[in-house]
Structures are given as C-alpha cells and as structure tokens.
Image (cartoon, rainbow, N blue to C red; front, side):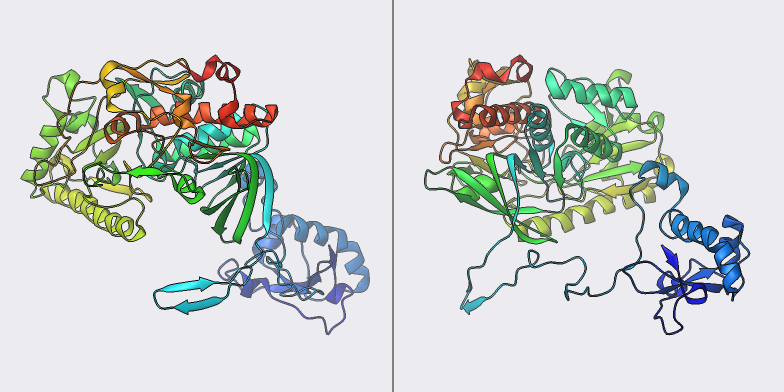
Amino acid sequence: MRETGCCGAPPSASSFNCRAEFPGLYRVQSQTVPCTIEGYSAFSLPVTPRFRQRFDLDIPVRLSKLEAMKRRKALKFAVGGGLTGGLLNSHSQEKVNPGNTPIPARRSRGDSGEVFGTSDRLHVPTSGTINGEWIAENGRNIPLRDKYDVIVCGGGPAGFTAALAAARRGVKVALIEVNGTIGGVWTSGMLSWILDAVNKPGIMAELVSNLETRGIGRRVHSAWVYDAELMKQLLEEMLVDAGVDIRLHTRVVGAITDDSNRLAAVLTESKSGREGWTAQSFIDCTGDGDLGAQAGCEFEFGRPSDGVTQPFSMMGILSGVETDEIAAFIRGQCEPRNLGNPKKNFLAELRSAGIDPSYGGPTIFEIRDGLYAMMANHQYNVSAINADDVSKATIEARREVHAIVSALKKKGGIWNELHLNCTGEQIGTREGRRIMGRYYMTSEDLKIGAKFDDNICDVTFPIDVHATDPKKTKEIEAKPFKSRDYQIPLRALMARDVDGLLVAGRCISGDFIAHSSYRVTGNAVAMGEAAGVAAAVAVKEKVLPHEVPFEALGAQTTA
C-alpha cells in the first residue's frame, strides 16, 4: 500500500470517501488522508479521533513532504492494519478467521472490461422461445465447475455422513447442498431429535460422542437431543477437517448419463449460474430422490393405492419457560415423574388455550433447561416434489406454530414468558420419491426381521405412518402389524436403472410401510456412511459401486 495525494498523489487523483462508503462508522466530522492502493482507484481515508487514538497518530490535514516521509511508515501501518485488518473487523474476528479481512473496493471494470465477480463462465445468457404453456430453451455451453472422485448431492444427515466417509477414504469429494448450512432437517429443519441412533457404530457413534463431549446434546431413552445451531458448526468442522469441498446454496437440477448408462455429470443452479460437475461415483442424499429421478431412475411415490404421502411438520424452538414447570408436557421428563402421557397432556393444554392443533400428538422435547423443541403441526395432502405445495405448507405451518405460542402466552401462568425463538427454515418432509434399487425393502422384511449378508444398518424403529387422512385421525395411524428389528442390505442403496449412482437416506428402495420405519435420521446416517465408503472404494478399484465386494467396505459400516 502507498499513500498519495498530499503524500505524493497528483491533485487530480479520483477518490472515494470511507465516510460515504461506510455510513455510520464515523460519527464525528473527520479529516481525511488521501491515499491509494496499487491497482485500485485513489481514495480518502477518514482520520477520526477514534482512528488517531487507536494508532496513536496525530496526522494534520496537510503534511509537508518531510513530515510525509517521516510518517509514511506509521500511516502505512494504520491503513493496512486498520482498513484491511482491524478497523472494520474486531480483533476476535481476526483470531478466529485470520483470512477473513475486507479488501478495498475494486474498480467497477478492469482493463479487460470485465466486471469484478463475474466472468464468461458465470451466468451464461439464456435464450429461447415461448410456445404456449412451454418454453423451448436454446442449447448453450455450461461451464464445468470441477472434476471429483465422489459427488454427494444433499447435505442432510445421510449426505453429511456419505461425504465424510468417502473423504476419509482418501478420495476427492464434493458435497452440494441447497440450504445455507449442512444438516438438512437436523439444522435447517430444527429437528433437534435423532431417532434410532443409539445402536449405530461408526460415524453415528462418533457424532453423538462429540455432541456429549461439547455439551450440546444428550441421550434421551433411545434417541439423542441436540442444539441445532451448535450442530451446524460441528458438522461443518468435521467435513472441513476431512477435506470435503462444500458448496452451499446450490440445487441439483439435472443429470447426464453416458453411452453406457453411467451417470457422468450433474447440473446445478446457484448464484454462480448453471454449472456442470463430473465424478466417478455419485450419491443421491437429497431425501426426495431428486438426482435419481433426474438421471432417469424409476421411483415410487406415496401409498400404492392413491399416492398420498405422510404429512409435513414444522418445528419450533421455544424458550422462556422452565422444565420443572412444564415437565408434564415434555417427552422424557413427564414419564419418569409419573405425570401421565406428555402428548395427551399437551394436547389438553393447547385445547384449553383455544387451539386444536393439526397434529393430534403434539410433542415438546427438552434440549436443555430453558430451551425446547416443539412439534405440533401436520400439513396434509401435500407433495414434497411440488414447489407450490411445499411453499404453501411452509407458510401455513409457520402460521400455526406462531398461533400456538401466542395462545399459550395469552393463557399466562407458566407460559407467561414463553418465546418462540425460531421455526425451521426448511419444513420437515417425511416422504418423497423412493428410488428403485437392486433390492427392494418390503413390509415383509419388517414382519420377519430380515437379515442380510450385506447388512449396512440395523433398524430398531417401528412402523411409523403419520396421519394421511385427518378425518380419520390426526395422530399416528394404527400399525398393520408389530415389526421386528431388521437389517438394510447395501443393495437397497444401489440404483437399479443407472450405473455409478448410490442412494442414501429416506429415498432408498422400499415400499410405503418399510419406508415409514427406516426413514428416521439415525438410519440415514448409517446408510450414508455405507454409501460413502462404497463410492470411495469403487473409485480406488476403478469399478462401479455395485461391483464392489461387500467385504471391502469394512466392518465399521455395520452394527
């Protein structure tokens, strides 16, 4: 950095004033020290009392050339350490993210005429014609973002684990996630509750150990409860430490197969425009089977008789109450105190407040004393693969959650200080597409407690179909039979119709009843780990994922 103006810049040098660029930062009339940074326009740096005090400077408006030479070094430190290192950022930010420092504003256009932040690879112009109810989009070249060994689409519980497992096997991995955080329903959905997790080895055991060690989660019966905000950071840290390339705010919108019917590339849309990504193996962890469907895989959707799926639910995070006061309504606190059934108690409490919730089994979980997760909402007859349905359901569900909290506050008493901290950015989806695999899980597998030589997940969670017809019930539907503990084979994760593609999470191959059991997130983690390892081994052995011998996966992926 070099100073100009009174320190050597021509009087005609153009400038911008930091007071105008950063209004509110300087509250008193200040002098300015004109200066420039090589390669950028000249600008005037305000010299405020705050600036003087911080850097122990006494810079007059005009300096003689001699004074300028003497103070050049001091001013250089002030500008470099202030504007680009500390004046706009706290010392704590510098210590946490030493590379995260603001840079001076660039010229709007460089010598090449290129606008900063763009290139001929970004936002390739589209064109086409409107033909009635359709638009014919003209062909265009799509920039290739990068080549990877394994690409995981969807960063929820299954996707997080798949990417982590693959990267730890020493291959180059990208994780593409539509939301602004890793974790899916765990974090964007504020689920705060991991079901069927306690019997899982491998990454699931590692994760819950981290939750306990950091004091951000604890076991409640056969589940784990956690703080969703702190979970975000934990998941990101684990992925970054493993070397996973994370791309957030990016949606998978297309897939390309080669002449041998092998998935060769995925297409995404983001702030960077449309991009292509290639890999040797792909894993669909989108939850709704988006990638599998885009690649041309056959899938099932909903109940076989009519296609109806289980309802959505919106989570709410609560505070302002104490556990001892509302223990009768908290799952895991009510039962050991012999206070009855927490769901029935809470339903009666809501009705006494004038609310008849859309879910007949409203539930509160204690994250810690003073912080709670509430699930009291059902959105019926909506499709996870229809954006209008999802949008409408999200708005209606959030309105109901707010109405519930408002009614309880109005009731007063123990609810007087109740506060709704937040709702899920992403509404909880129980069911989307089920991609056809090389094995198809059925209700018969649950009935007999099926075991497999290529077992990758032991499931203990029962059949759990939330109400599909609120006229009949708004709770959990009656179970057709009592299921036994069963296993999921690796083959159920291998796409049947397209090579090079694995599936993990609730979108694996299975029928409506089987899906209602294996869909919970503890099982998604185990599936993700198996898929990630299989994909990585396939890359190293130069074979397709379904050609990997099960023995090559290692015992850590099974119970």
